[in-house]
Length: 294
Image 1: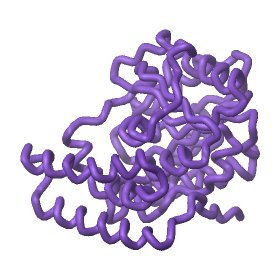
Image 2: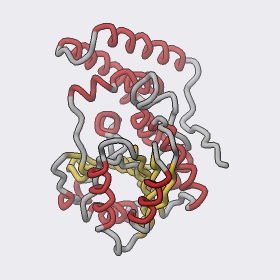
Image 3: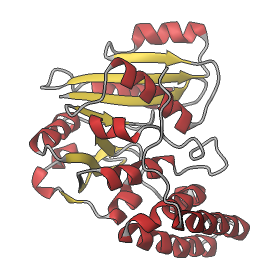
Image 4: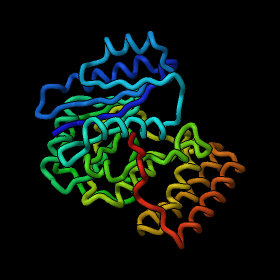
């Protein structure tokens, strides 16, 4: 099998050390019964820095560089486009979208590919994440069919992994969502929910296998509007998603009471969510989004 990872990083940001940790964690797992291809988008990249990156990054990396900064959704679409053109995304491929401050400690990738090999119907895999990951706790017997609540509450770009054929069918991330857009997030939730609705099988393991900061009240508040809009889109498609959509309004009230979300921001998000929900009652949004291949 093949592992295809898609990551973007800001060359003028402050995550150089974290990005190096992530690349190192992947490089340490070479030589198994799978191949690795890691597509990396360097944003705000000067030519001199790009040259150094090409010399120093592992040989399994394929680099794309742009001189400006774009939204996360647009960045991932650019990477997806390149991967689909160069690799093809098929049944024997597992696709992930780790952020530059995430890491995938050994032997996670080996266990991940075995899970996809063992279950030909497995299209979407979700696991826990933590700043103290324990990849040795990857026990296939702990996998269970994921509920909508587990995908919505736990799924992020760092800990969802798709079979390549599903990733190819899903197409693009929604560029109206994510950091750098008015909705300030939700693009990975939208992608995970669309994948969940199309997957033949979605499996979840509660173990914290991936290294990354888990969600807290501050991040929930930061991305509240985007997440609510996403749930509004798909609530009518699945009873579990309808339950999560209704619950999200109560989560917003709790965030306001805790001082994490301004009342005005909550009201604006609630109005936006209801507008999206009523607009989808008569016309369900598509689950696939075109990815314009060059």
